[in-house]
Image 1 (cartoon, helix red, strand yellow):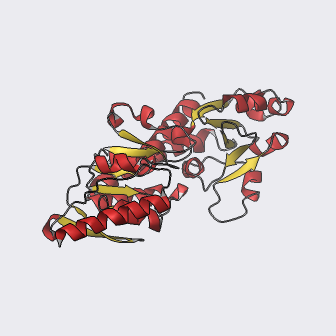
Image 2: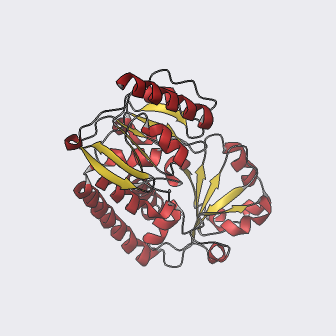
Image 3: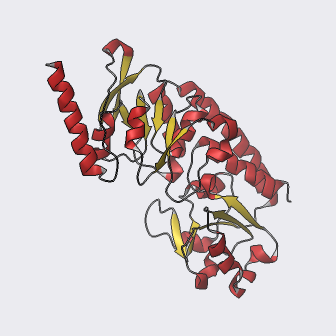
Length: 322
């Protein structure tokens, strides 16, 4: 009977892999932790219920945002999937992230390697029902829900609650809030009449964009009292819209007193095309030499570690430069 169940499990996994991940290598062996009820706890999420270990030791993060939250909670994942376009935040995190195995890009994660790593928990954002069925054959799987750029605090709390780290998460948020208040005090006294814009440049894309108040970096700037250009707020067409595309001819949409440029890997050429435009030279931030190039690996998406890294940049470029 056990042999029949085992074969059925193998067959199911192969069907799922073929149907959902046709480009991935076949899984030839699949093991699933057999945890007794007393050794795990039931976690309810949008895709169902998962019984996860009380103290997971071998966590796979399905994206770098959940990886980052786990690291902040002193739960180092054994592996993580990297973003498709933006740079990886791992180099920014230094020793904290050393040894985390890469599972490839989000568009094509290495399922075979996931199996070989023998995780005891798989966790991430925006998991589809098909992915959930597949990952659950490897280890207990929990979805944090859809990724909402300006909802990172709630996401951290959900991950902390799942892993039994709620007190630590609250401490991190309290410390973050203290930094926000310190920066807000400076902004209220020195930058009340200044506007700040955030633009992202992609590799091989002829357009740029500005990040709205609903984006990850935009929500942080708003939180510390920094004002985004009003024209940007007027162009938001739906709730929680994180960005608006900007052509070279509409550089007026990113015109502000201070401009942060988030560069993806390989985006330098596209950025240079904009810099060579006479319209670029007319931007207030360019004229005042207040254009700052930052890394998209933590300025575009992220959680508590990326949020603090952005605050570091704001202290450097706004406070120390004033």
